[in-house]
Each structure stands twice: as structure tokens, then as C-alpha cells.
Length: 524
Image 1 (cartoon, rainbow, N blue to C red):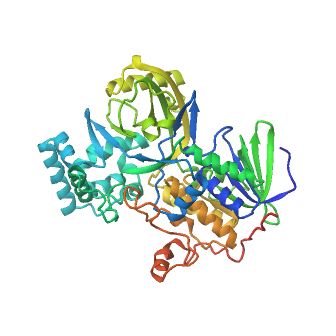
Image 2 (cartoon, rainbow, N blue to C red):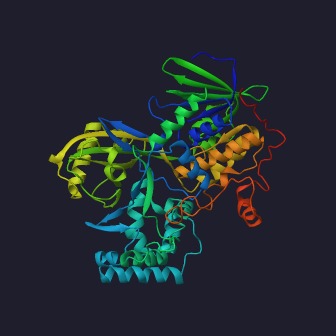
Image 3 (cartoon, rainbow, N blue to C red):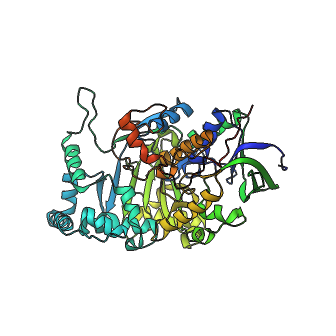
């Protein structure tokens, strides 16, 4: 692709949920858009669906559930006819026994035994009477919430396997963001209701607020959603360029952007009025010219990488769960997905089960650098250790690697992100950071989409009227509640709703760009 003199309204870096949501909405509103994506085949980022010999793999498992009405409406608009409703079932594997997740009280008491259950409750009581008042780490926060005993059983081993670092070195923000909506007492009460069958919807149609037991899912995996979004963007005359990796980002004297990308055919250049970036903040900073003053802080941001080993096993189904959390120090696998339980159409052969073993690693460490053959051998061995299948029943396998799957919440990340954000937003009012890696925040798919939706509103308004950094800041994690029950963007809102939404707006804003940010013209 040769350099073009044409100036598009918006260049978008990354074709994941955030990038494609922005591209879809901007295309719908009539803006000219060009998206660059470094993957040569798949859109969707970590929400893509990989296909191998007719089997489809979801990278990490992506439930389609959101409390945001706008997100739910957009899902329905992009993919109106292909959602299926799926039962949720997940368990924890600990010391050779399975624990339902969310908790079933009687089952947990039986599995742990009376003595250990008593110790858990005593430990919980101690944490409530004598809490740690100097909370700095994940360990501090979680022990305060659940007590040391429950923390050591159900949080410590798995969390350290996922993140590759001790829990006392992880920021408390991680726990506060991901576990905030779950209390021990609430889990016990809900578990009792589940055990006794008392959590069903009453006849009047009003839903009881219980932990999420069903979810919607595209019949061919989440990649189906993002393939449809890509196709819509292209149908509007805009471009989604695959195999294009960000090389450099620079502004000219008029404030327009020159975005250069590396491709198999050489260098491509896109000229744009605005740039939306879902690229990892560390990569973005190193590619801006001239280099920003916040580059040292950006380079200090860390990421956890991820790989899935998919095994095809001779069996109609190995277990009924969507996924199982593995709390077992004998194996390296952290979680096992059962793709048929996500959607029967993900697995083309009824006599073959397809499971995905998830390994958390750092790029270029021993696991990441292992050959596919060695990883498949490891996965077969660990499935046998867990008693989930026999190695001789495995008839095929594939490996999918995902770099920078998780932004790491270490003890310095918050300050580093704040410095970089302040630097870039002050200098570049028309540069917008969105999504999980684009903001170095562990957003769910719907949160990533919301950051893009609000950014599109900001571009259209010509100012940062919405503070995208508040998305998922105080949100209750979506294990409970009703789908689409909250409206974030609204043309008219009631007075009490306005108060609730005030925290999402920049009032006051850290960076006042209303006077300097340019509003792009819509394409003809």
C-alpha cells in the first residue's frame, strides 16, 4: 500500500473489541476510518476465535453478559441472529476434589471437612475483628475480605500461577476491581439458596439478584461478533488492514497524524485527524515521534502472556463445565475450557471432545518458547494427572499463543499509567487510548467496548466530555445482576441518573481539551 494523500477522519490501531467497536460506530455515523491490525488473519484480539481442522477455540473464554444497555444493544445490532443462551457451570479443582463456582455451601463444607471449614470461619472472623489497616497488596486486601485460610485455599495458588509473582507484590487494585462485588457472607447466602433451590425467579417475573447462572454466546464463538463488525466497516467503504503492525506515530504542523505500519510488502502510511489506540501503552509510547517524556514510565509497565493448548479427545464429553479452575501445584495449567459446553457448534464431531488447557507465562520463558509438540505432550500428561482424560484418548492438538494478554497490576503500574496518560493527553488532544492494553487496565470485553463508545462520543463532540478512564473504575464485577440494566450514554437523563453519571464525566477534567481538540468532518 503506497502512502496516500487522502486524510481520513480516524486511524485506529488494533482490531480488538475496543478498536472495532470504535470503527463500527464511526462508520455508522459516516466518518472515514482506517483500522490497522498486526494479525494477518484474525480480528478480535484476545476475543478472537481460532479455527483448526473445523474445531474452534475461544482464547480465554468470553461470556456475553453486560449490565450496560448500550453494549447489549450493540451486540444485538451487530449479531442479531446468532446468539445462543448457555448454562454457566464452572468449578474449582482443589486437592483432587471439585468445588462449584460460585460456591455451593453444603458441597464446600463436605469437601473441606468440618475441621477445615471451622478454621476458615474462624479465620474470617479474625480478619473482620482485626483487619489489616495498611492495605497495600492483593494479599492484604483478600485476607481482609475472606480471612487467611480461605485466601490460602482459593486465591493464593491460582493467582500466583496466573500472574507469575507473589500475591504480596501485586497491587490491591487487582483484588478490589475483580472481587469487589463478592463477599463471603453473600457467597454463603447465595450458595445456600442454590443448594436448596431457592434462587429461582418468582412467578411475578421479577428476577432475584443471584450470581450469574446463564449467559449468551455467539454460536461459533466470539470471533463471529468481530468478523461481523469488520465486514460492516468495510461495507461502508472504510478499511481494516490485516498484517499491519504499528511502526511510528507522528503529528505534523497542522496537528494531523501520520501513522506508519510495517507490512509484508513494506511500509504503509495512513494520514488521519484523530488516532484511537488499543495498542499496549508500552508499545505506543515507544513508537511516538518524537519520543514522549513518559517513555521511562511506559517501559516499566509489565504484561502477562498466555497460551492455550487445545486437545481433541475421543469422548462425547469429558465434563459438563464451561471451564474448571485448577488449584493444584502438581500441574502448570491454570484453567481448562470445554468448548462444546460453550457452544455445541464449536466442535464438529460428536464423538470428539475438545478442551483447551490455559497456561500463563511470560513471553520467551520456558513455556512460551516450547515447541507445539512439547506443549501438547505436557497438556496430555497434566490431563492424566488431574484425572480428566487418558493420554491415549487424545487424537489431536493445537497451540495458540497470545502475547500481552493481561496488563500486570504491580506496585508501580498505577503511577506509571497516570504519568503516561497525563503526558500524552496533554500533548495530543486527538490521541485517544482505549481498551484493555490501550489503558493498561484489566477490562472485560464490555468495558473495553464502552471505552470505545465514549471515545466516539468525544470525537463527535470535539472534546473529552466523557472520562473513559472511569469505565470499570467502580463497577461491580459482572457475576450478578440483570443484563442491560444500566444505561451509561443517554440523550436525556433524570436528575438522579445525572448524579450517578457525573463520576463518568470529566468534572473537573484533568486535561481540558475543549478549546484545542478538532472535530473531524464526516466523510461524504
